[in-house]
Structures are given as C-alpha cells and as structure tokens.
Image (cartoon, rainbow, N blue to C red):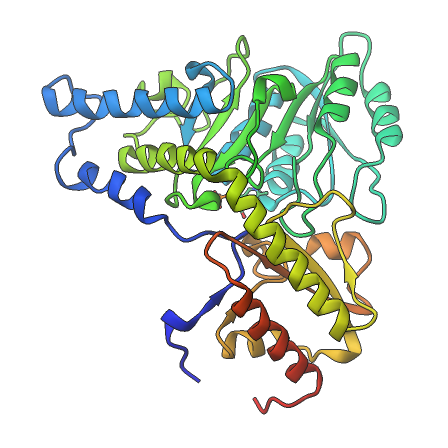
Length: 384
Ligand code: PLP
C-alpha cells in the first residue's frame, strides 16, 4: 500500500527530526546569496566567517561555555570518533571504560582505537533498566587509575533506544576523584534540555543538530578549555586546525537557530510532549497487558521504549506499522534496526521492543491511530 507522505505519523524523532521552517528560512540565504568560502578574505567570505562565529557564540552561550570550546563537525558520529580518538591519542589515556549500550559510533570507534593503540577496554555493569551501576563503575575506574595512569571514560548522557538518562554529575564526580578524562555522548540531550556543559563537568561532549529540528550533517564537539586535541580530519586551518574542510555554513547557521528556538520554546514543548507520552502510556497499558516500559524512572521525555510480549505481535510488526503509515523503530537507525541495547539487557527472547519518539509536531489523534493499529495487529487483523 502506497502511503501518502503527508499522512505519515512520524514517531521516530530519536532517529531524526523534521527541519523547522524557521531554521530553513535562516539557512536559505547561505545557499543563495552568502555563499562565499569563509576562509576567503573578500567581503563574501567575511560575511560567512562572521555568520559562523556568531553561531558559535550563540550556541556556546546557550550551553554556558566559551565559544572557542565548540568545534563544528559533521554530526554525532564524527564527534564521537574524535572524542574517543583524542582521549586515547592526545590526552594520554591508558585505558577506556565505556558501556555496551553506547551508540555504534562510540562502540565501534572504541573497539578500533583501543586495538590500534593497544590499550585495554572495560565495560561498566548495567542495572536491569540500563542505568549504570555506580559502585561497579568506581571499582573499575579505581583499578584502571593510579601510578600516573589516566583512564578515558565514555558514557552517554541518555540512551537513544531505551531513553534512560545517566547520572552525569555522579559519573563526573567519580571521574574527578580518579583524574579520568570524561566524554559524554549528549546527542539525545543537547537541544532537548537546557544544559550548562560547564556545570555538568564532562571534559568533552557530543551534539548533533538533526536531532533537534536542525539540519543533517552538522554537529559539534564541546572540548573543555585547556584540553588541546589533534584533528581526526587533516587539511586546512578551519576550526582552528581541529577540524579541516570548508565549513558547512548553512548547517552551522541552521544549528544555531534550532538551538535558539529550542531554548525559547523548551518549557511549552516539554509540557506538550510529556502530556502526549503520558496519554500514550495510559492507552498502551489499558490495551496491552504485560508490556514493559523501558528506561527506568528517569527517561527522556521525548522517547518511549516499550517491550511487548512476543506472542502478541508478529515478526514483521515494523513493516506492518510502516504499511499503515506509522514510522517507528526498534534500535538505532545506524544499526539497521537491530538492537544491541535490548540484547545486552536480555530482552530479545520473550519481547519485541518498539521505540516511539516524539516531537512538537505530534498530536493525540496520531497516538489514537497508533494504538488502534497496534490493537488490530495483535488481533491479527492485517493481511500482508
Ligand atoms: N549518538 C547518539 C546517542 C545518537 O542517537 C546518534 C544518532 O542516532 C548519534 C550519536 C549519531 O549522530 P549523527 O546521526 O549526527 O551521526
């Protein structure tokens, strides 16, 4: 069945979000009028250079940090790669502690760089809801520190699949106690919560614009003052030599606009999405006995991960939902839909998990349609 894209119910906002019209309007002149190369020293180039630096200032001030601590990159994946590489190569970390439920860009970069540089990698123990066992984390860190040995810790701020939010301050104070270098993948929280990165304490943090109604292919790495790293991508002097390549000017300008819009509207949007999510959970609980809501008590307001007892839904439930115009996902879009997170939490045997993720554009009517569709699916009313 061909779905009219206008009719799609899009509940996959943790994978990517719709570009805000106001963001697009802000970006357009940087395609059509102000297209000078920001490294050029003529008027057209200076115009775009100024736009980049204004965007940097604006993003930094909203995050409570200095502008030169923000390095623009192509997004979350590149930022995570650079963070892990820099921790090992540039900041002298002799081992790495991370978790098995990080985004693939942390897991795969960690596997590659620890092997390449011949350093050890350890994984923190997780509670059944996916949260980090802080006592185990401290034990691991203590064993990996001392005698001048520094450890790189890479733990995400919020999990993109099950939505649980990490106790960043708790992790950070343990990191400080043992002199560890702390990286946090904040792709699901920056642009979703008003954060002061300086106060949160991590040394290095990752963000991606397309997760908060900004454009794709742009993000940044926050690097605490005084930590100087070498690039992942070598070339010209852009981004103060930390990240070579002609800047994605329209993307940078769009990301700054998306961040400003988020800050202006955060309270209203969070309230709207919280109400929507609460309503959805009520509807699901009434209609699907035995389901499990993942992510523990502290979960992202924008994500609802639900494990349904397997007997209710057929193997191709994602396809069935898609055929009915409903876009959701199981795991990270980058993992092709398989979930290493649910496997790690031992929830793949008896359950099928669906990640519903919301934005300011979703409505209660859409939730009603999704619940109706799920009910029909469980009652095997669909002929595929
Ligand atoms: N980290 C997390 C937690 C994510 O959810 C994602 C995107 O799915 C990424 C990193 C990768 O970001 P990008 O798509 O900008 O490369």
